[in-house]
Amino acid sequence: MPAMTEPKLIAGNANQPLAKAIARRMSLHRGMSVNLVEARVERFNDQEIFVEVYENVRGEDMFIIQPTSNPANDNLMELLIIADALKRSSAARITAVIPYFGYARQDRRTKARTPITAKLVANMIAEAGIERVLTMDLHATQIQGFFDIPVDNLYASPVFALDIMKHFEGELEDVMVVSPDVGGVARARELAKRINAPLSIVDKRREKPGEIAEMTVIGDVTGKKCIIVDDICDTAGTLCKAAEILMNHGATEVHAYITHGVLSGPAVERVTNSVMKSLVITDSIAATDAVAAAPNIRVVPTAPMFAQAILNIWNGTSVSSLFETDTLGPIYEGIL
Image (cartoon, rainbow, N blue to C red; front, side, top):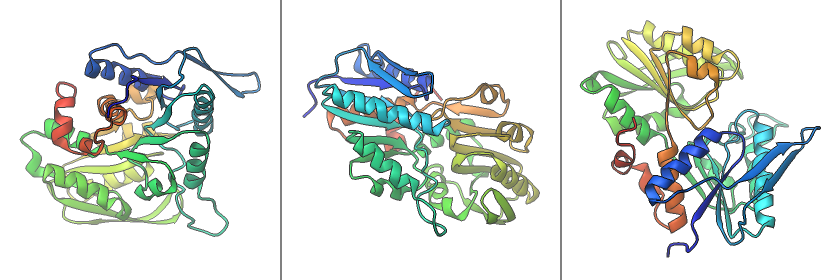
């Protein structure tokens, strides 16, 4: 049965533009004004985080919109402290909407004496009183099993498929989807299936984290418009080198569709100066001024998908329906 109260949104400082966009989309879906709950999320002089919620949230179904992107520690603490404030204010249910789930890259022990921070963060989130998590494109899907609370993991691939079908209309027979490593084959295959395109792989061998020793292209990319698909682009070193390798193997164009544009350090400059014709990212992480000014970086919105997912969670209907292009098509009509 649908909840009797309306869903209420509250946001930290990590991605205010996305939070406001989600509220606007929910207003359209509901036919009534949905606003962010008024709150104060500030710092003491020693940078401790202070939160004060100005509105009554007793018995309310609360959704905290807060990616844990850079600065990851500050944004994670904001999320936990907001959740604690809501729990102590007697909110009926607290759902964390985490478009980008930080610390997900440390999801297993690859060496002795290393942490599994994805599990640690999962424990912290549950301990803070959060009862459900809504996120998008977890770095590893098994992270859902680190939680003892429900986790809804949305996928960017249906939105990317819509965008590709629009921007490559009439040229889809020349498109080839490329995974930048063997570990991302499942993600690339999913997108390739949606647009009915062949699949190739750039196999890379690392000597140590952040340094690539060798790259090999598996598959014939000659004469193809290659689309590299991945979940995270951090410093863009791997991405730009993969694009160069594909062009050297006969690709006519290289584009990239990356869910989370971390784009730290020299990433934007590398992408701007690379052989890539375009890099498409989502707004799961707030775009910096450098990203907004880059001529070959484009951002697709996730607010329509998150707004519908929040409403589906609130009224007890299927979230997995949003995995389908046919479902998202009407939601994104006129946007992409």
